[in-house]
Length: 199
Image 1 (cartoon, rainbow, N blue to C red):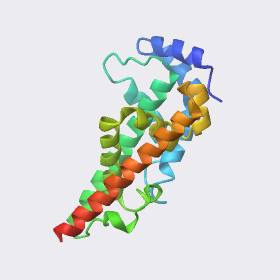
Image 2: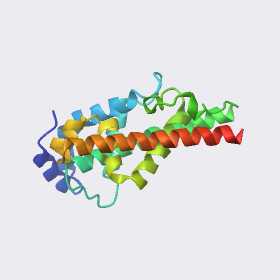
Image 3: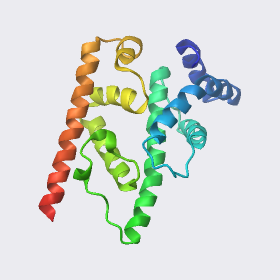
Image 4: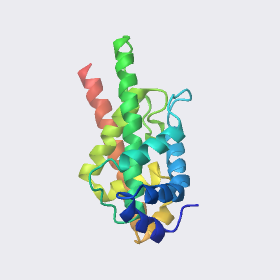
């Protein structure tokens, strides 16, 4: 289990300046970080060379490489961690996709797997494309993105997000989750249509 929200928030204020506080913080959040990393890695191909433990360790280090990070609470810190992990996997996928293009392999068409849950997996180009769609969601609908990030990437249940994290009605969280899925579906369908029109 994670440490208490209050204890983690206190350490967040100290960890940027103190290696000792960083160590204590890491021990408190390690289980949640591993849960997040494992959830992200499940969408990767089985022979992925990155390991969840490496993802956890590197993400934690990168979070404290930023200049004067300002996390008001545990959830902001975990959301930032999920974003760092996702970017690490996307950077890795971009390299893999470039190798595949160099070998003459064409990227998999977006309309071959229309469901969001099928994104990523064995094709690195799809992970890159999914990340671009998610970043679009974050820019255009930040409140829906927040729910999407907590549920899809971090593994919190919608009820938990409503009651323990965002402190808002469950119906609001459920609606924002639905809006996020609808937005991504529209973007996927639109990109598939554009790809077909270009052929």
